[in-house]
Image (cartoon, rainbow, N blue to C red):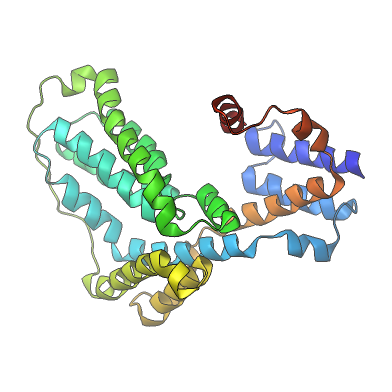
Length: 316
């Protein structure tokens, strides 16, 4: 049983890492789904154990945030934020700084993948309008998204998993990661300017044509206050004794009930593939934990709370 669990685990992660295997139509969600089914099929976990293995707190928090993000996306809120802030830039250096900090801060309170997907078309249009090379700004956006998302529990799925299972309060998490993320964003601005010297050497002025974007202001008057309420409740969750996933689901239900976008349209926007990926991964990891297949490797790993141990853990 232990051997079967280990083989399934390794095969699953090969599929996750190498998403283009010859002759196999595989990606991360399908690899995790296959691994979960294999764990059940070979009797490593039962159907009941598989259901119990899924961390529904993480799934519900992701689902709630995805619904809220979907409504804000359909309202044009992200485009409005990106366009409004970036339009303040009068030269290439200011544009780079605004791209980094707008993307980073937005990624802190929303799932970073969504921020990148929604900000990219705006950045491309701004670059075309100003006759700029988009490459440095897109690099800055991608890296700023990762740096900024590290500062809150809701910034990325990994943080959601850590926050839910550790019980760290939302505000405490932000307080300790905020300085690191801000320093990272400042450093990123200088690094991008260093690697793309010619793009920022002249500091030439730029213009931006903001026409062509669509915004649903009537819907935003409902969705944005609900989103801000959800963020506030995240901070107050320890005092109110309300779990963060419940707050996210509450916000999602409110935007579906009182928003101006049809709920069926919103539900189609949800990244169900990511939820399937996490559910499958929970089952695969539970199967390998139950059999203790990885325990000898974990026991031999020189993990500790010092710099060396943290470095090894970070690499893993």
